[in-house]
Length: 233
Image (cartoon, rainbow, N blue to C red):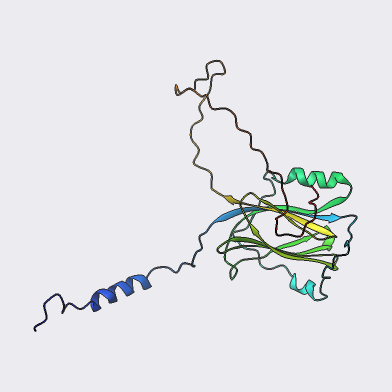
């Protein structure tokens, strides 16, 4: 039985053209976008630190070599002048008399997968605090805290982060409070409208009756899966 024109049509040229088109596309890391996050950490010393019978690993003698500051990622921007979301907690820790803030830092960065994540060096308290903090974005967002205090006490922990949640990385001698918030570029500026206090009418003739909204900072709590220890704030 003779073949019809339809059955004799070969997909070869079409397939070849498709492969050439796909090969010309720029490579994209699987599951990754150039998302940016604001990261804020407080590292504090427990002035009355004790192990409470728990066994904690001591810092390895080779750790200082591992903490040579890596090259800074060009996408990391310090937010030294920006308002700090955790400022009230830092002030409360210093006022308590039981804790002392060693480092309080905020920065904005692009998050990458683990193969391309750049550790942010942390060196404070006259060299007594050394280590890195690394933000990793894969299927979930994680923060790796790898710090050593006085070359003796090591805090090495990875925590899954959720937007706006505060996390407490615990050690008898010192600890870390961290918060990660997605960053969105502000919308383009629009002309301001004046509102008459008596009429509530804007200069554009629109009635403004929206109530003022105050943002309430959530009370931080330790994660259920984490070892139970009261957060110092």
